[in-house]
Image 1 (spheres, rainbow, N blue to C red):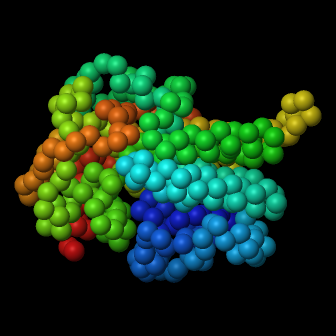
Image 2 (image 1 turned 90 degrees about the vertical axis):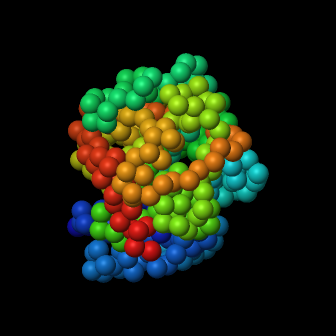
Image 3 (image 1 turned 120 degrees about the horizontal axis):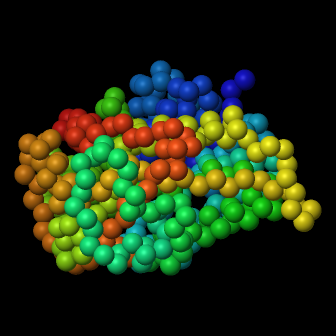
Length: 363
């Protein structure tokens, strides 16, 4: 019998890919989204790939009565939680809005999960929970060619957390702590996946990252300049202590990222905790953490250069002041996922860029 999975904010960029991958793997997805920053048209594009539309409900997570009815209607096995506000700069301008959206809404969802005994959750976390001050002390080494082994200098799951630099990152950290306690005291089973920088598009050309207005993420900004939608890219300063003065990130193709989700999900299904353990009379659940990334690094100027090679377009850019809350470099050690989930990123940077340009060049 199919496992039934509730997924929040499905029409978002990553999560629409998630729906396709899990439906193709023979899971049933039930999707809720308030459509505040996404389009219902995404459902039509998913239908082109799957040949049918998954169950969709336009519900705000604050609408507890509608969510309650959904839990009554479906016998959920899992929840996959993606419903976030996620712009670093905006969170610095609107911290209370981010705390309300990301934390309060999530707590309402967790309350219903507990009420209906749906205690399995995949949580979309972030590398931003790490103490970035521990990664900023020395210049970044010269980038290795992609595919030549794992960068052992990157952040591992054992790195210190907290000491966040903006409200968005703080919400991720606090929700991780809440889920840790729910695993200890309410028997929640949590697969906590820490993302770094997901990018690019589905190779079908039907699913892509195309945010409204000025993008908060680098690649769609570059692509919108390349195809003429925007005139110029803003590069947030060039005096960081990195290989070329621009900030450095660890990127992963979105299709590889979702494949990693699938393997993590199946691990918990096929290798659940051995019975229910007790500690001082309390039922214990499970809290498993994985970094999801490639283990390589790319600077802003390198990304611009590689995009110019693929698009055959000159990417005009200008240097602007640093963005509040940003850090110079974020790159990870994904060896835990490689060793325990037997997965490694397969999509090259060049092919990822080509998939993205396939969409943007046809707009």
